[in-house]
Image (tube, rainbow over all chains, first blue to last red; front, side, top):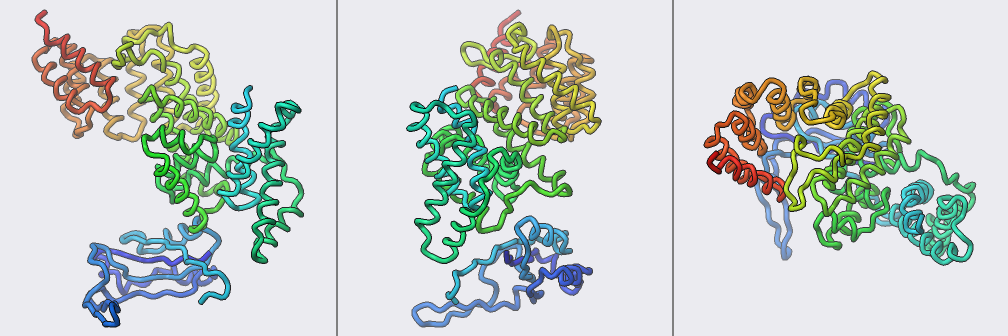
Length: 112
Length: 391
């Protein structure tokens, strides 16, 4: 199963932006469960895009104004939700922020 | 046993096995349903088979194979049907299947209400309509809740298994919490007492499946102690009858004896936990010949061993108030930093026993405002009347 770990936090989480993952990445890469991921600049740097009636609409800022914002993401491939929970719980951001585990939609073969 | 009772007794096992074999919760339920329908045709003629569970599982499994063949539009489904056909007939009594089912239904990634509904439907075999009625929601709402839960299990990849040993300490309490919630839903409401019966049935199953888990046995003992007093808790008019005024001769001695033996055996394992402690408290009440015989110091000491939630802290003060007198209790009550809704009722009782009638009446009035059940309200109104009449 593939899952996206959405790592979120409030403004105070920004202080951790350059912390690194304290060995988490190395451990999970060695375990072979990481497919990709990155940390993100804060939502103040975001640009939101919508196209309505062929018109391009741009907004400065994130798509939703909420207290907690996504600050990074990791794509993992592991056995099941229990393993995904274990992986997410080990991430240092779980200690100060929130990690949402979203199963990746598996499309039928041939659909891209 | 009637056919319906046989179906209810075997349902969880049939569904649990079919889920393992097909990996499809909806299909498993439908095929179990069809197997019961087939039994209704065959059994009146042939009699109930010696192993009705095995009979139902075999029929359900054959229905599943038929269905997968019929619906085999893609290669994947054909393959699935092929695998199912080749597999040796599943042992119908693989006990782990029901344990797998319990742990999956009670997975903490599911919302509590979904866990409860799923457990009642797939394991206990209640119909969607019955569950909807028990939780006072429409059948459509309950049906959606069940479908959503099963969908999440499938899409989010919740594994169908008994968690490995290192996860059991955090996952077993999740299962026990579902069963205890179920029991309490039925215990607080006469109309829904069938939920308590189901909770006890499931707890018995859990104890049988996890004989080394002392908290499962502790929970079952706790439920049995409470259940023994079920008939004496409410007056004819529905008013709550407190422990000290219940007719102890009407408590169910058989249940109490069973619970005591179970708790004794369990405590000897030397791995106490919150359910065992609560069962020990219930045992103090259930085994006291009269209300005045109650070992209140022991009860207070047991409450001190539980996590100090508002309700536990309050119960501890009640016990101390019974052991050392209402004046001591009242003093401790003032130090409690909680606005738990039962607090005014406890204060009212202490004041009443101290004959401070005016203050007691005021506290009973406050408690009445906060009461959540009819039984509580009737009881409090009766007490209020008592302290209001001139003596």
